[in-house]
Length: 369
Image (tube, rainbow, N blue to C red; front, top):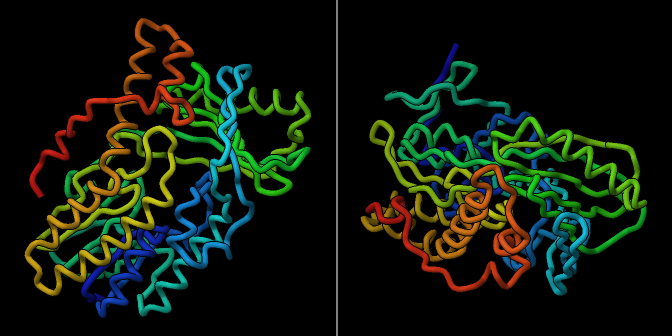
Protein backbone atom coordinates (compact mmCIF):
# COMPACT_ATOMS: atom_id res chain seq x y z
CA UNK A 1 0.00 0.00 0.00
CA UNK A 2 1.53 3.30 -1.07
CA UNK A 3 1.24 6.65 0.64
CA UNK A 4 1.91 10.29 -0.25
CA UNK A 5 4.08 12.29 2.12
CA UNK A 6 4.04 16.07 1.67
CA UNK A 7 6.44 18.79 2.77
CA UNK A 8 7.60 22.28 1.82
CA UNK A 9 10.93 21.08 0.41
CA UNK A 10 12.25 17.76 -0.84
CA UNK A 11 16.02 17.31 -0.99
CA UNK A 12 17.17 14.49 -3.27
CA UNK A 13 20.64 13.27 -2.29
CA UNK A 14 22.09 13.54 1.21
CA UNK A 15 25.77 14.02 0.56
CA UNK A 16 27.32 17.28 1.81
CA UNK A 17 25.26 19.47 -0.56
CA UNK A 18 21.93 17.83 0.18
CA UNK A 19 22.40 17.40 3.92
CA UNK A 20 23.45 21.04 4.31
CA UNK A 21 20.56 22.24 2.15
CA UNK A 22 18.07 20.19 4.15
CA UNK A 23 19.39 21.35 7.53
CA UNK A 24 19.44 25.00 6.44
CA UNK A 25 15.88 24.88 5.11
CA UNK A 26 14.60 23.09 8.23
CA UNK A 27 16.22 25.62 10.53
CA UNK A 28 14.39 28.32 8.58
CA UNK A 29 11.14 26.71 9.71
CA UNK A 30 10.33 24.63 6.63
CA UNK A 31 9.02 21.08 6.55
CA UNK A 32 11.77 19.15 4.78
CA UNK A 33 12.09 15.60 3.47
CA UNK A 34 15.59 14.40 2.65
CA UNK A 35 16.08 11.19 0.66
CA UNK A 36 19.11 9.24 -0.48
CA UNK A 37 19.49 5.99 -2.39
CA UNK A 38 22.24 4.84 0.00
CA UNK A 39 21.07 2.60 2.82
CA UNK A 40 23.76 3.98 5.12
CA UNK A 41 24.70 7.65 4.79
CA UNK A 42 28.15 8.15 3.29
CA UNK A 43 28.67 4.53 2.21
CA UNK A 44 30.15 3.48 -0.07
CA UNK A 45 32.74 6.27 -0.12
CA UNK A 46 33.43 7.64 -3.63
CA UNK A 47 35.85 10.43 -2.80
CA UNK A 48 39.58 11.14 -2.45
CA UNK A 49 38.69 12.78 0.91
CA UNK A 50 40.85 15.91 0.70
CA UNK A 51 39.30 19.14 1.99
CA UNK A 52 41.01 22.54 1.58
CA UNK A 53 41.80 24.55 4.68
CA UNK A 54 39.10 27.25 4.36
CA UNK A 55 36.33 24.72 4.90
CA UNK A 56 37.55 24.12 8.44
CA UNK A 57 36.53 27.65 9.33
CA UNK A 58 33.16 27.16 7.64
CA UNK A 59 32.16 24.00 9.51
CA UNK A 60 32.93 24.27 13.20
CA UNK A 61 32.91 20.53 14.01
CA UNK A 62 34.74 19.25 10.92
CA UNK A 63 37.60 18.23 13.19
CA UNK A 64 35.48 15.29 14.36
CA UNK A 65 35.89 13.64 10.95
CA UNK A 66 39.48 14.67 10.21
CA UNK A 67 41.93 11.82 9.65
CA UNK A 68 45.09 13.83 9.01
CA UNK A 69 46.24 17.41 8.49
CA UNK A 70 47.90 18.33 5.18
CA UNK A 71 50.58 21.03 5.03
CA UNK A 72 51.88 20.98 1.42
CA UNK A 73 51.55 19.54 -2.07
CA UNK A 74 54.10 17.77 -4.26
CA UNK A 75 53.47 17.70 -8.01
CA UNK A 76 55.31 15.33 -10.34
CA UNK A 77 55.24 15.59 -14.13
CA UNK A 78 55.88 12.25 -15.86
CA UNK A 79 57.18 10.97 -12.47
CA UNK A 80 60.58 12.68 -12.75
CA UNK A 81 59.95 16.44 -12.65
CA UNK A 82 59.14 17.23 -9.01
CA UNK A 83 57.72 20.52 -7.69
CA UNK A 84 56.92 21.30 -4.05
CA UNK A 85 54.16 23.72 -3.03
CA UNK A 86 54.59 24.73 0.63
CA UNK A 87 51.76 25.96 2.83
CA UNK A 88 49.12 24.10 0.81
CA UNK A 89 46.98 23.37 3.82
CA UNK A 90 43.94 21.22 4.28
CA UNK A 91 42.88 17.90 5.73
CA UNK A 92 42.09 14.34 4.77
CA UNK A 93 38.72 13.50 6.24
CA UNK A 94 36.80 10.32 6.95
CA UNK A 95 34.19 10.99 4.28
CA UNK A 96 31.70 8.43 5.56
CA UNK A 97 31.82 9.90 9.05
CA UNK A 98 31.60 13.42 7.63
CA UNK A 99 28.47 12.62 5.61
CA UNK A 100 26.91 10.80 8.56
CA UNK A 101 27.61 13.81 10.78
CA UNK A 102 25.86 16.13 8.32
CA UNK A 103 22.85 13.83 7.96
CA UNK A 104 22.58 13.58 11.75
CA UNK A 105 22.70 17.37 11.91
CA UNK A 106 19.88 17.58 9.37
CA UNK A 107 17.81 15.09 11.34
CA UNK A 108 18.40 17.10 14.51
CA UNK A 109 17.18 20.20 12.64
CA UNK A 110 13.88 18.42 11.99
CA UNK A 111 14.43 16.93 8.53
CA UNK A 112 12.48 13.75 7.79
CA UNK A 113 15.27 11.44 6.57
CA UNK A 114 14.55 8.55 4.21
CA UNK A 115 17.52 6.31 3.32
CA UNK A 116 17.61 3.48 0.80
CA UNK A 117 15.10 5.38 -1.36
CA UNK A 118 15.51 5.86 -5.09
CA UNK A 119 13.41 8.22 -7.21
CA UNK A 120 12.06 6.29 -10.19
CA UNK A 121 9.84 8.96 -11.76
CA UNK A 122 8.72 12.56 -11.36
CA UNK A 123 5.15 13.36 -12.29
CA UNK A 124 2.29 15.69 -11.56
CA UNK A 125 1.56 13.79 -8.36
CA UNK A 126 5.13 14.13 -7.04
CA UNK A 127 8.25 12.01 -6.81
CA UNK A 128 7.57 8.28 -6.96
CA UNK A 129 10.06 6.17 -5.02
CA UNK A 130 11.26 2.66 -5.73
CA UNK A 131 8.91 1.27 -3.05
CA UNK A 132 5.88 2.79 -4.76
CA UNK A 133 5.39 5.60 -2.28
CA UNK A 134 5.09 9.22 -3.39
CA UNK A 135 6.57 12.34 -1.82
CA UNK A 136 5.65 15.86 -2.84
CA UNK A 137 6.66 19.46 -2.14
CA UNK A 138 6.56 22.88 -3.76
CA UNK A 139 10.36 23.01 -4.00
CA UNK A 140 12.80 20.25 -4.99
CA UNK A 141 16.53 20.58 -4.34
CA UNK A 142 18.58 18.29 -6.56
CA UNK A 143 21.79 17.30 -4.81
CA UNK A 144 21.99 13.83 -6.31
CA UNK A 145 25.45 13.92 -7.83
CA UNK A 146 27.07 14.29 -11.25
CA UNK A 147 24.42 12.19 -13.01
CA UNK A 148 21.55 13.94 -11.27
CA UNK A 149 18.06 12.65 -12.05
CA UNK A 150 16.65 16.00 -10.93
CA UNK A 151 19.04 17.85 -13.20
CA UNK A 152 18.06 15.64 -16.13
CA UNK A 153 14.39 16.38 -15.46
CA UNK A 154 14.99 20.11 -16.02
CA UNK A 155 17.42 19.62 -18.90
CA UNK A 156 20.58 20.47 -16.95
CA UNK A 157 23.04 17.64 -17.51
CA UNK A 158 26.75 17.28 -16.76
CA UNK A 159 27.92 16.23 -20.22
CA UNK A 160 31.65 16.46 -19.43
CA UNK A 161 32.84 13.91 -16.87
CA UNK A 162 36.01 12.26 -15.62
CA UNK A 163 35.90 8.62 -14.57
CA UNK A 164 37.98 7.67 -11.52
CA UNK A 165 39.35 4.57 -9.84
CA UNK A 166 40.88 4.59 -6.34
CA UNK A 167 42.48 2.02 -4.06
CA UNK A 168 43.62 2.24 -0.45
CA UNK A 169 47.24 1.21 0.06
CA UNK A 170 49.58 0.96 3.08
CA UNK A 171 52.17 3.74 3.41
CA UNK A 172 55.75 2.80 4.21
CA UNK A 173 56.37 6.22 5.76
CA UNK A 174 53.87 8.73 7.04
CA UNK A 175 53.68 12.03 5.13
CA UNK A 176 51.81 15.31 5.41
CA UNK A 177 51.84 16.28 1.72
CA UNK A 178 49.39 15.39 -1.03
CA UNK A 179 51.17 13.89 -4.05
CA UNK A 180 49.92 14.75 -7.53
CA UNK A 181 51.08 12.82 -10.63
CA UNK A 182 50.64 14.51 -14.01
CA UNK A 183 51.21 12.62 -17.25
CA UNK A 184 50.19 12.72 -20.86
CA UNK A 185 48.95 9.17 -20.31
CA UNK A 186 46.29 10.47 -17.92
CA UNK A 187 44.15 12.12 -20.57
CA UNK A 188 41.77 14.64 -19.03
CA UNK A 189 42.80 13.87 -15.46
CA UNK A 190 45.65 13.10 -13.06
CA UNK A 191 46.68 10.65 -10.36
CA UNK A 192 46.98 11.25 -6.63
CA UNK A 193 48.35 9.81 -3.41
CA UNK A 194 46.53 11.31 -0.41
CA UNK A 195 47.82 10.14 3.00
CA UNK A 196 45.47 8.98 5.76
CA UNK A 197 47.87 8.16 8.57
CA UNK A 198 49.36 4.72 7.91
CA UNK A 199 47.45 4.27 4.65
CA UNK A 200 46.73 6.42 1.61
CA UNK A 201 44.16 6.89 -1.14
CA UNK A 202 45.85 6.16 -4.47
CA UNK A 203 43.67 7.11 -7.38
CA UNK A 204 43.52 8.16 -11.00
CA UNK A 205 41.04 9.92 -13.28
CA UNK A 206 40.69 10.04 -17.08
CA UNK A 207 38.12 11.03 -19.70
CA UNK A 208 35.33 8.46 -20.18
CA UNK A 209 36.73 7.26 -23.53
CA UNK A 210 39.89 6.15 -21.68
CA UNK A 211 38.03 4.40 -18.87
CA UNK A 212 39.27 0.99 -20.02
CA UNK A 213 42.82 2.15 -19.16
CA UNK A 214 42.06 3.13 -15.57
CA UNK A 215 42.91 -0.24 -14.04
CA UNK A 216 46.21 -0.86 -15.88
CA UNK A 217 47.38 2.74 -15.41
CA UNK A 218 46.65 2.61 -11.68
CA UNK A 219 48.34 -0.78 -11.35
CA UNK A 220 51.39 0.64 -13.12
CA UNK A 221 51.57 3.64 -10.78
CA UNK A 222 51.06 1.42 -7.72
CA UNK A 223 53.86 -0.90 -8.85
CA UNK A 224 56.19 2.06 -9.26
CA UNK A 225 55.42 3.34 -5.75
CA UNK A 226 55.98 -0.16 -4.36
CA UNK A 227 59.31 -0.30 -6.17
CA UNK A 228 60.27 3.03 -4.58
CA UNK A 229 59.31 1.58 -1.17
CA UNK A 230 56.69 4.27 -0.69
CA UNK A 231 53.65 2.00 -0.44
CA UNK A 232 52.91 -1.62 0.30
CA UNK A 233 51.71 -4.09 -2.31
CA UNK A 234 48.32 -4.65 -0.72
CA UNK A 235 45.14 -3.06 -2.05
CA UNK A 236 42.91 -2.63 0.99
CA UNK A 237 39.82 -1.10 -0.66
CA UNK A 238 38.53 -0.15 -4.09
CA UNK A 239 36.17 2.63 -5.14
CA UNK A 240 35.52 4.98 -8.02
CA UNK A 241 32.98 7.19 -9.66
CA UNK A 242 32.33 10.10 -11.98
CA UNK A 243 33.35 13.75 -11.50
CA UNK A 244 31.69 16.62 -13.42
CA UNK A 245 34.28 18.75 -15.21
CA UNK A 246 32.25 20.97 -17.54
CA UNK A 247 31.64 23.85 -15.15
CA UNK A 248 28.53 25.34 -13.60
CA UNK A 249 25.12 24.44 -15.01
CA UNK A 250 22.07 26.69 -14.81
CA UNK A 251 20.91 25.67 -11.32
CA UNK A 252 17.21 26.53 -11.69
CA UNK A 253 14.24 24.89 -13.30
CA UNK A 254 10.67 23.73 -12.91
CA UNK A 255 8.99 20.32 -12.79
CA UNK A 256 5.20 20.22 -13.00
CA UNK A 257 4.89 23.63 -11.36
CA UNK A 258 7.48 22.92 -8.67
CA UNK A 259 10.58 25.07 -8.30
CA UNK A 260 13.85 23.16 -8.69
CA UNK A 261 17.27 24.20 -7.36
CA UNK A 262 20.48 22.28 -8.09
CA UNK A 263 23.45 22.20 -5.71
CA UNK A 264 26.88 20.56 -5.48
CA UNK A 265 27.92 18.12 -8.22
CA UNK A 266 24.39 18.20 -9.64
CA UNK A 267 24.98 21.89 -10.44
CA UNK A 268 28.45 21.22 -11.91
CA UNK A 269 30.27 23.04 -9.11
CA UNK A 270 33.19 20.62 -8.81
CA UNK A 271 36.50 22.15 -9.93
CA UNK A 272 37.14 20.81 -13.47
CA UNK A 273 40.92 20.64 -12.95
CA UNK A 274 41.38 19.38 -9.39
CA UNK A 275 38.08 17.53 -8.95
CA UNK A 276 37.62 19.20 -5.56
CA UNK A 277 33.95 19.44 -4.71
CA UNK A 278 33.31 19.03 -0.99
CA UNK A 279 33.65 22.71 -0.11
CA UNK A 280 31.48 23.75 -3.06
CA UNK A 281 28.88 21.18 -2.02
CA UNK A 282 28.65 22.48 1.54
CA UNK A 283 28.49 26.14 0.54
CA UNK A 284 26.04 25.68 -2.34
CA UNK A 285 23.87 23.39 -0.23
CA UNK A 286 23.49 26.06 2.42
CA UNK A 287 22.72 28.63 -0.30
CA UNK A 288 20.06 26.34 -1.77
CA UNK A 289 18.43 25.88 1.63
CA UNK A 290 18.38 29.64 2.14
CA UNK A 291 16.96 30.18 -1.36
CA UNK A 292 14.19 27.65 -0.70
CA UNK A 293 13.21 29.50 2.46
CA UNK A 294 13.20 32.82 0.60
CA UNK A 295 11.01 31.38 -2.16
CA UNK A 296 8.45 30.13 0.34
CA UNK A 297 8.45 33.55 1.99
CA UNK A 298 7.36 34.90 -1.36
CA UNK A 299 10.57 36.79 -2.17
CA UNK A 300 10.31 37.33 -5.91
CA UNK A 301 14.05 37.79 -6.44
CA UNK A 302 15.12 34.61 -4.64
CA UNK A 303 15.77 32.68 -7.85
CA UNK A 304 17.95 35.39 -9.36
CA UNK A 305 19.77 35.85 -6.06
CA UNK A 306 20.61 32.15 -5.86
CA UNK A 307 22.15 32.11 -9.33
CA UNK A 308 24.03 35.36 -8.77
CA UNK A 309 25.47 34.18 -5.45
CA UNK A 310 26.68 30.90 -6.97
CA UNK A 311 28.33 32.78 -9.82
CA UNK A 312 29.92 35.26 -7.43
CA UNK A 313 31.42 32.52 -5.26
CA UNK A 314 32.33 29.92 -7.90
CA UNK A 315 32.09 31.54 -11.33
CA UNK A 316 35.62 32.86 -11.86
CA UNK A 317 37.47 29.81 -10.54
CA UNK A 318 35.26 27.41 -12.49
CA UNK A 319 35.61 29.42 -15.70
CA UNK A 320 39.41 29.43 -15.41
CA UNK A 321 39.52 25.71 -14.71
CA UNK A 322 37.22 24.89 -17.64
CA UNK A 323 39.39 26.86 -20.05
CA UNK A 324 42.65 25.42 -18.74
CA UNK A 325 41.31 21.88 -18.94
CA UNK A 326 40.01 22.33 -22.48
CA UNK A 327 43.30 23.91 -23.57
CA UNK A 328 45.14 20.87 -22.24
CA UNK A 329 42.79 18.45 -24.02
CA UNK A 330 43.37 20.31 -27.30
CA UNK A 331 47.08 19.57 -26.87
CA UNK A 332 46.26 15.91 -27.67
CA UNK A 333 45.35 16.80 -31.24
CA UNK A 334 46.76 14.55 -33.99
CA UNK A 335 47.36 11.77 -31.42
CA UNK A 336 50.21 13.72 -29.85
CA UNK A 337 50.79 13.94 -26.11
CA UNK A 338 50.85 17.39 -24.46
CA UNK A 339 54.16 19.08 -23.78
CA UNK A 340 55.40 19.69 -20.25
CA UNK A 341 54.58 23.35 -20.73
CA UNK A 342 51.00 22.48 -21.62
CA UNK A 343 50.77 20.21 -18.58
CA UNK A 344 52.13 22.96 -16.32
CA UNK A 345 49.57 25.42 -17.66
CA UNK A 346 46.84 22.95 -16.79
CA UNK A 347 47.66 22.47 -13.10
CA UNK A 348 47.11 24.78 -10.10
CA UNK A 349 50.63 24.41 -8.66
CA UNK A 350 52.25 26.35 -11.50
CA UNK A 351 52.24 30.10 -12.23
CA UNK A 352 51.26 29.40 -15.84
CA UNK A 353 47.86 28.21 -14.62
CA UNK A 354 47.21 31.57 -12.96
CA UNK A 355 48.39 33.76 -15.85
CA UNK A 356 45.87 36.21 -17.26
CA UNK A 357 42.92 34.74 -19.14
CA UNK A 358 40.08 36.41 -20.99
CA UNK A 359 37.26 34.72 -19.10
CA UNK A 360 34.18 34.99 -21.29
CA UNK A 361 30.87 33.88 -19.74
CA UNK A 362 29.61 30.49 -20.87
CA UNK A 363 26.25 30.13 -22.66
CA UNK A 364 24.81 28.84 -19.38
CA UNK A 365 26.04 31.92 -17.54
CA UNK A 366 24.52 34.19 -20.17
CA UNK A 367 21.14 32.52 -19.77
CA UNK A 368 18.66 34.61 -17.75
CA UNK A 369 17.67 33.33 -14.31
